[in-house]
Image (cartoon, rainbow, N blue to C red; front, side):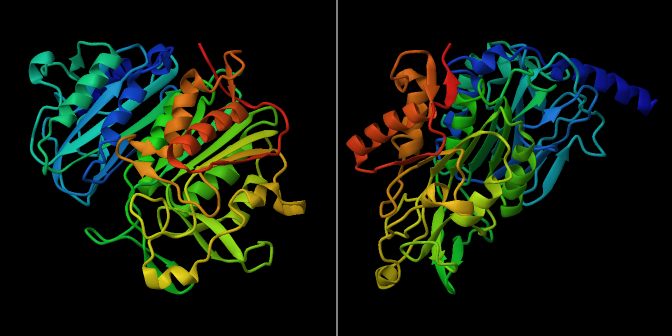
Length: 463
């Protein structure tokens, strides 16, 4: 009898999870873009949230899907599902399991072994977005009179964009001082169309590995330095992923605890290495940068630059160049919104130092980009690399923008402002020219470019 019940529930879920042509997800101001807004509010809590194959992964028809959730604190979990056919459902809690309280520090798998339902993926193909919110007190993010909770997975009445706005407003009115956390994850049913040549890896890290309530830290040259949590890197990665979804339909998004050294390495040397030669590959990173003394004599200023993975391991510029050498695609775009020098300021994407430590870190003369412009095996010839600032400058993030300064103007450019020749195709080179000019003019920060391709690389086609 229980087996029969499970099959019925699976059938209901299959109908819900069935995906079609994802028109709404690609519209300007669509649900994915709108759902970045809560992430720009600098949520006070951490929430790890993904599907079992990873955000951006492809699921085939008939596969079972599981959601993994781990909240920093006790709270009440709500999961919204934006389907490709333009519907929005609450999938947790639901009619089969209405207790949505979860314990902090415990990883939950939904559905778990004790839950009386399963999630099964069914056609048609397309993109699906899941958005999760955990609140300290039990509350309706969306007013309960908008939907009928007697249905298995309550459907909200509005369009995806309308419901995304409603969810965003529901989070905005959570009282100041009350703990909450939010996260987003998307996946695809069925392989992207064969004509889709874009592969994109998007990494954003706000919160680095540390004990609960402790200040983050990083070891550099045998000393310990503070690694402050950042506010907008996850929003950066999610927003860039959404803005480029039509061009880079093969996507993988790694945020916070998902973005370990091993996960980033595998995504580049494993997953992106499977992209065909005629593909365009884009790698985007938003998070902390650092530096260590050069050990192989290939840096003019004696320092290796690095980006910092979630588990506080450094990905040196040399290592990243080597990893990217495994990519077969003839066009690779690298975008890094980070800096490496160390700073005494707040809201800067590098490790924190004090006045006494400043003499240990003289101004950098060559930057992260050098290892992609360098000669011989050290260089990667087919890369267009965009970085947020000069080697001796900092990369800022600002509450007024809800993003890193560089990323904010990349996003503005992708809306159309960067299309300098008005041909409805935005290239990486055009995008850099627009963002660099705006960032320098407004904030004095000077983004850098290395063009190892030598011809336009399209990153977005305008509708």
